[in-house]
Each structure stands twice: as C-alpha cells, then as structure tokens.
Image (tube, rainbow, N blue to C red; front, side, top):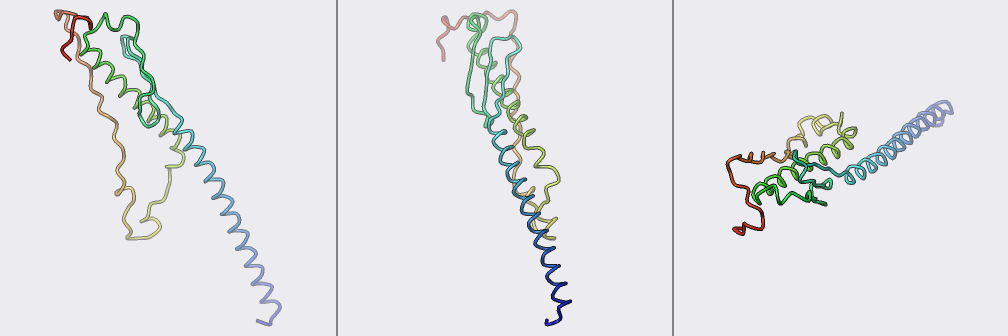
Length: 160
C-alpha cells in the first residue's frame, strides 16, 4: 500500500468509522445515564390508597412493601376486626398496584422498541419468553357488611 491516494482513502474511511464509533459510544453513555435516572426514579416511587369509607390509608414503596398504615380514629368503632382486616388487605393491594404503575411509567420509555435476541440473532430464543412478567396482585373485594350483622367492637372480640 505504497500508493498515497489509496492510503489517504483508507485513512479517511478509518476516520469516518472512528467518528461513528465515538458517536455511538457517546449515545450509549447518554442512554445509560438516562436509564440509571429512570431506574432511580422508579425505585423512589410510592403508591398509596385509602379505603372507600376513609378508615384505612396505606403507603407502599415501589417493591410493594408497606411503609405506612393509618387508621381513622373511629376505625375500630365502626368495624369488626375481620372487616377491618379485609379493608386493610384491599387497600394494601390497591396501593401496590398504584406504586407498580408509577414505577412502570418511569421505565416505559426504555421498554419500547427494545430489540429482542431473535431480532439480533435469527433463531435465538426470545428473552421476553424466558422472563416472566409480574402479574398484578389479585384485588380481593372486602365482604360487604350485612346490616343485620351485629357490629362487635374490637374490645369485645378476642377470638383471634
């Protein structure tokens, strides 16, 4: 390769490739930083829910772990322990769904148009098929209080 014209053409192509690789690396660094920010935002999300009667309020973190439970001052006067427990479970589930929705919304821009292995390597197994997607927790409606059912206070009941 003693021909100066060929050498100059090769150096020009190499420079172009270097510029493209540098641009791709810079873009990757920007995307990685944005992904880290979105992950931190998703992890910081909390969900909350309040029972329809306003007696129970729950806050959960992005993992669905309860971080706060508050009862209205008259919560124990207006419910049996069973009914209050059902209400607590329902509100926790609603708060967890809220937190998960917020976390998924923070990550949504990074989950769109992401290539899967078969897109890159024909015949490769799909990662989407290998990784289970978390299902929403079942929302179990609390039993409706019967008007004829006596309303025992928590102090009168000790069968738990």
